[in-house]
Length: 86
Image 1 (cartoon, rainbow, N blue to C red):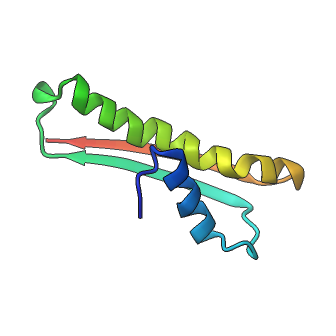
Image 2 (cartoon, rainbow, N blue to C red):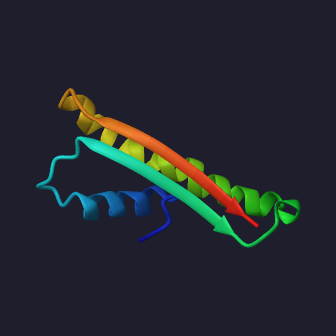
């Protein structure tokens, strides 16, 4: 896998999943972040990691395929994100 919060890593993940010969009509971004920290101990550094994974990761994956879907006049992207803290 990789860090989907990083656009280059997200691109590598998508290119590996769709090897150039496959058509991607539906893309489900199921992004989650798991930490053993209690919510009361999450600081801004932890929150930035959560946001990078869940928010930036979802948009990075979507941006890579949306233009191809628009060009083909079809497709759907379903973004999902979850956070699990103790």
